Amino acid sequence: MSSNNEKSIDLILNLTKSLHNSGTNLLLCPYSLLTTLSMLIAGSRGKTRNELLKVLYSETRLSNDEEIQQFLQKISKKHQEFIETYKNVWHQASMVYCRDDLKLDSSFAQSLTKMFQAQTKQLNFHSIKDSVRIINEDVYKETKGFVENIVNDLDPEIALLLIDAIHFKDIWDKQFDQNKSHLQSFRLSDGKTTVETWMMHQTAIFNYYEYESLNVRAIRLPYRSNQRLAMLIILPSDNGSVDDDGGGDSAIKTLIKQMNQNHLKAILDGMLATAPQKIELSLPRFKISSTHQHLIEHFRQSGLCLLFDQCQADLSAMLTNDDDGIKQQQQQCSNVIENPRLYVSEIMQKAMIEVNEQGTEAIALTKISVRNKRSAEFIEEMICDRPFMFMIILSDPLNILFSGILENPLSS
Image (cartoon, rainbow, N blue to C red):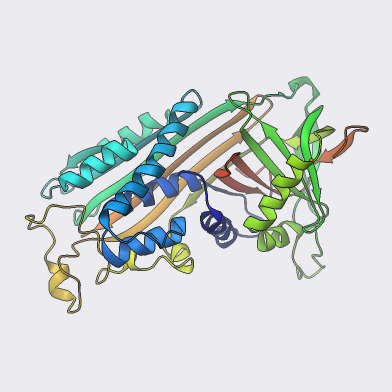
């Protein structure tokens, strides 16, 4: 949430790199992840809170509760402004479910409501069937029926579930004519295999840039609701150097390895510095659905560690001090800080996107389990007939809402 700073952009790109499997489509919703992890900042203390602030926002200067509260209010304000500005195309709901024999700390609950507009509910997690039904009904409703069964079972010892659901749907500012779409070959990342897929076509003026440092071409496709909201497509100029034995890296794999916030900024700055150009664009229809079950290890690689350590995590600001709910953890850990109570045992995300002639629809749901540019003098052709990276971005300042990789448009 809020505008992605350099640290969070690299965190997003590193997550994309870490999650990508060659030949497999990928979709991630960084905005949902940052929203949910930011809720944890409000419920954490000490070194755990400092680590969250450092990894997510590069913030190391905050020294007391008042300064941290002011920082959270600042990013919350930007989040609320974003939600209000794009309320016709972006629907987001955050929910916190607390086990009914525990009690949320009143300050934490107020922060959730005020800063994140989060709903809070007490559930009897021991009544597993009813709790699963309620959570899935809430998620189904908030995602307009696109995400089902986020929870199939519940461990009754889980203390809290933090869930963030997003539904995004917008149309292109310049739509594709469906009558011009036709079957066309799409080369997969091995450079040899092709599949026949529906390719959309249009010729129009777009922000376009050829970035030689990565040997890619990039195009920005704005949405109708607001010109600041757009899909950025980054297309490698060739398919790389995969040999007969499968050795060598494909172009898309090389791009993912090399991409960082400096390259991304250079691409976007290059677009702004040059005049929009008439482009003959060919883009496949595609639909991607991704489930990321084990995100904790990926966050550990980025330096977020204390949150997942049951003997060191300090999420004690989530529950009131007079609860008797989670004592066993204290007895098992000899060097724990006073009353740690909780640690994060799971972070997972489901995300879906569909791109067609009209526009884009995307869904994301994140769950955290808490236990105890060029001149326009000629037409440039951009045929996206091979794997590419894409992002749904908000510009000025830059915010990456969704990021993904299309390897095969026939594989959802």
